[in-house]
Image (cartoon, rainbow, N blue to C red; front, side, top):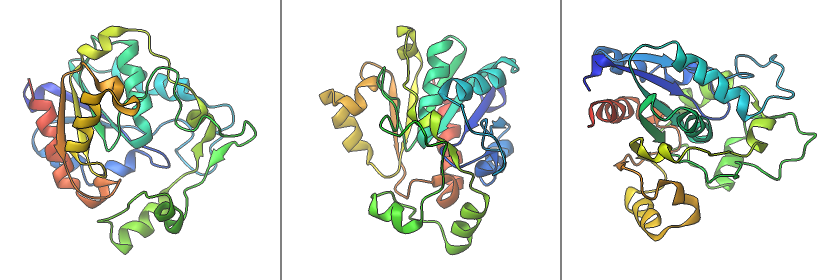
Length: 239
């Protein structure tokens, strides 16, 4: 598949909208890739109503984007969007040419990102940088200007999405090739986990998986946008 034959649907993780891909999209478009960055329901603005939103709503939004495209589709999911894109693949595995997980990976059937989140919590504000550090989540590579813009534009994430369990039904999902861009977990560590059948990596076992090392923090679209674009382009061109 050449770059000009592909549609690349870019799905950002928690707190982010389509704007998160602003520094990645130009590099892809220069190579002829047709890009479709997505803002998921509830993440357009701080004033959005996020009550009652679930993973199903986010999956439906991405499926609607895919349904409007003619030709090969590569799905890119960053961080928490892994649950979204894997569910889109499971819903229609013959429609997706390849899926790219950016510092993330697919969940096991029945798993949720934050299953213990209380039902009365409606949304999840962006944590402080100190809280990210305490949790071991790295924002390495983003300068002060970038961090300020990130915080300025971030929108609280719908809590119902984080509580929602992934439901997998179609084994053909494993026929869809996978690229994992490994930022905070080295590719070698992930490969060992897959081969060992570790529960957190088990969904990748038996799939056609390419691992791309990209040492940086958890948000490579901000810290290494050109390199991330090149990794996505490599996934587009992969056989």
